[in-house]
Structure formats: C-alpha cells, structure tokens
Length: 248
Image 1 (tube, rainbow, N blue to C red):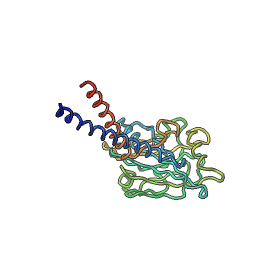
Image 2: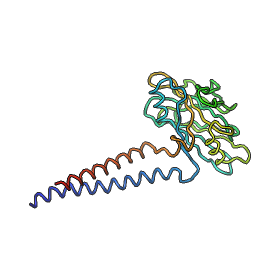
Image 3: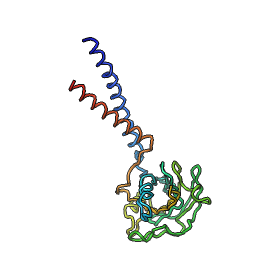
Image 4: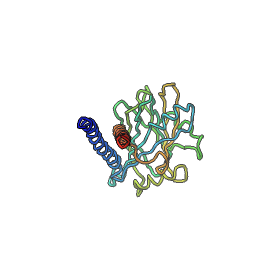
C-alpha cells in the first residue's frame, strides 16, 4: 500500500509544480500582451491582400506583416509607422505607400539592421491599387522603397523599418487613428505595401486593415506567443491528469 501511495504521489507533486508554472506563464503572457498598449499611444495593424497572384503568398503576407502606429510625442507633432516582418516565411516588403489622411510630410526614414529604404517609391503607385474601392491613391511624396538589391534591402523576416511623419497643424495622434478608421472614405488614411521575395518568386500588394478590423489591436511577439502556447498546453495536460487520477 505504501509503495502504491508513493508511486502516485510523486507524479502528483510534479503535476502540481507544472500546474503552478503554467499558471505563472499564462499570467506573464497575458500581462506581457497588456503592457504593449499601456501607453495608449500605439496600435498594431495587419494587412489584407489586394492582388491574390498566389494564394499561399497572400496568406503568408497576411500572417506575418504588420505596421505599428505610434505617437512620437505631443510636443513634436509627429507619428511613427514601424513596418515589421515577423517571419518565418521568405518575403520582403520592398515598397510602402500612404493614401493620406492627416499627415503632412515624411520627416525621417529610420532603417533597421539589414534594411535600406529611401523616399520615393518606384513604381509611384501601389500594385493592385485599382483592385479596391475606392482605388488606392498614393499621396505625392508619401512613399518609399528599398534600395538595390531591392529584396535584400527590403524588410525581410525579423527586420523592421520606421517612417516618421510630421502632422498638419492642430492634428494629433488621435486624428491619425480617426483617419485610419475612415479607410478609403473622404479624409481617410490607408497604408499599402508591395511584397516580393516569396519562395516562389512572386509579388503581392497589401493594404492595412482598419484599427477596428480583424487585423487591428496588439500582436504578441513570437516569444510571447510561445509562452502562451506552453502555458495552455501545460494546463490542458494537468486537466487530463486530474481526470485520469479521478478514474483510478
């Protein structure tokens, strides 16, 4: 009898410790996701494909390409757009375009490691611009593209690009968010990207999803997503163990 109790108690203790760790991991995961918008001055938007040259490439772009819209500061009257490719699939953002709402002009382009962009994209209009209604119309001067070699200097997996805009007088970060909500309507703001470097060699065009759409909100970093997944799997395993223990 004692041997039986000791045999069953040991895995029970392990499971209890695992349960405790899973709860802690889940708490950290949730708190980590909550910290990102804590300043109430950043949102993350996903992108929707508008060309669909290849369904697989379109799905890759929608899954791993994002833009963070951040308030640089009230005194500076600026807003920053951070384009990110979280990977892992081969792809490279090579052109970015803005269909203007409240922006005034590009103030700065900040290239991340391995990225080299310059103001003024070629071609001057987003690929697939006429595939959406109303058509995407790039505001003069509100575009940038990667330098040659374009794919290598584009935004590849785990790379980023920052573009800072000056705001029109009396406009604010909140005005930018309102314009993003309007999308293609009068006074709205849309962001377009051209993506190349897919494994099959194709290219695709994308336009941002609105803040209140499916791609809006905060996107957890890969490490946070891993932690969440581990926590949920651990909790699921603990529940299965308790059911087996009850039956025994």
